[in-house]
Image (cartoon, rainbow, N blue to C red; front, side, top):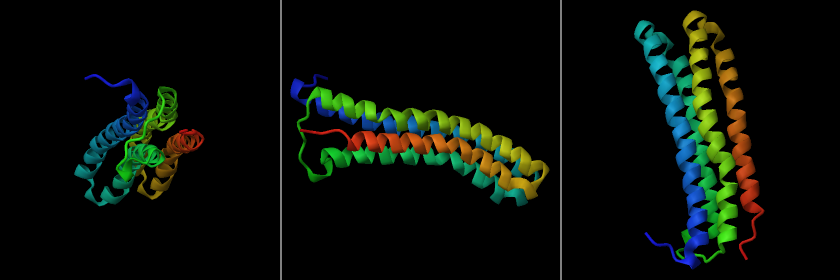
Length: 163
């Protein structure tokens, strides 16, 4: 595929948006899958704990949502929903691409590691179900960095001048 020089900026910007969705989504997929396997083992033995482990399994899914939000900010910034394809310089496209990295990489790694902490929280549920809130809090602490990545991406995108 050949990208015309005048389309390179747009291609780089769309690449950044795509990376935000894909990498943060992969983090969520890995985190939710790992924690889902652990949850299945607990629920197989004690089905009444389903609600508590479901919450812990769901926590890593938010990183994929954050990646989508980051990509949506790029789409809005470029005005792609209006039907016109903007012509931006390759430097601007590269800046947008790089601005997407905090949510892309933050979501990738925090989603995977949040899944691991969620599994540890499920161990709390398995042994002391009344203490399940502590597992949720511990897991949510990892998510803080995905949220910071999203905020950084939004602020960086907003600071880029398209002209």
